[in-house]
Image (tube, one colour):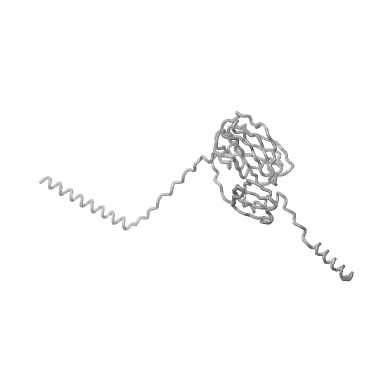
Length: 289
């Protein structure tokens, strides 16, 4: 190959290198979370696992749907390098059970009332075990405070954790509940700052040390001068599991009436009555004779 041909070959290779697409970078964690929701199909993230080797089998994205893997049931979605395990199909309405964790969804609806209210979350037992609630918000934010609306036997909040978008659990507060034990109700404001965004919060309660059901109505996440409210919730236990839904009575049976047959039966009854009356008259006459 002469010098001219060699130069042309090198130039062609160079152009090919320039025209080739650069290697794709993995999506940012916030973008990955959105993608893992599959166009809003899923919500209530239960678990996030890092598994970069699974990309060989599933590619950069895979929606496996409802699965039980590694002992964890849920809707499994792979967005390399993470597995996202979701509890709910967002489009499937869930019952709002009395005392269920779903009572913490949205702004307060028990507050400013207090006492044992079915519109707040309550654990299965009063003091049988320490409890926790896991709360999900619509979008990742960089929070500055948590607002816990406690409406019955407050004072049990002992620890707050948040989750990075890679699934890492971070403790942001630990101590005595700002609302004292013995108060009828209270809004426990827990300020904290983290250098990352989050949309999941876990609250731990020392329920065994604070007598009675420690009920929570709502939990606000303050960020940028705005309060965000829970969109999905999970709990270590709930009194709702003991509350049986009242069976819906079946609708009354619809009886189709054959008008002709009904009239014929009515005629037969009249004739029987007349025959009975004539028979009674005969009996009376015989007795007189």
